Amino acid sequence: MNKIKLKVLVMLLVGFQAILGVAQPVADPADEVPDVMPNDFAFGTPITLERAEVAINAAIAESKKRNWKMIVAVVDVNGDLISFKRMDNAQLASISIAEHKARASARFRRETKLFEKGINIGKNNNIITLDGVIASRGGIPIIENGKIIGAIGCSGGTGSQDELVCKAGVAAINK
Image 1: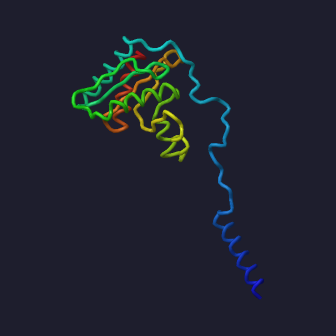
Image 2: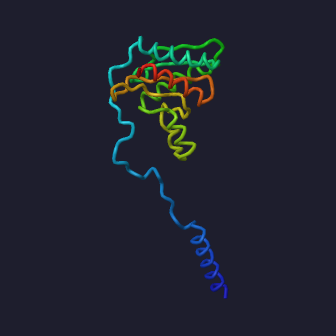
Image 3: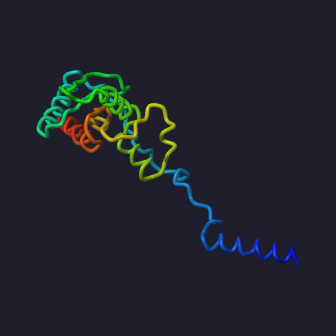
């Protein structure tokens, strides 16, 4: 009698798992293999100091227009600092954050916003295991003629504020 009860119980559990979808394996989006390499920009001649200053000045002007206190960094294709400005009374923690955002954007050839989205929306938590990643918007590559020449990183506000200021800097280069 006990064997029959046990068999019925097992059958019920298996049935409930099938109904609830527990027994169904869930597809892992990381297993998908894209046909084209994402963010496959070639590296160009690194941004010059003069052009880095143009980007920074445009970003600072946008910040002043909105009364935001920002820190802005521009790096070359390797992520090494070319130029940097800190607005008066900007939060000091943002010094290293702005540079980190720029460096990650240059080295990974993508906006840092994509790391943020990958973790928050895509549940792609393995991103945090990659050296040099910062999953916060406000790092944008500077691309000219289809080649990455550097990146800009901004910090001091919210992620969306940092991103908007960076976009002003990139736009000044792409005029």
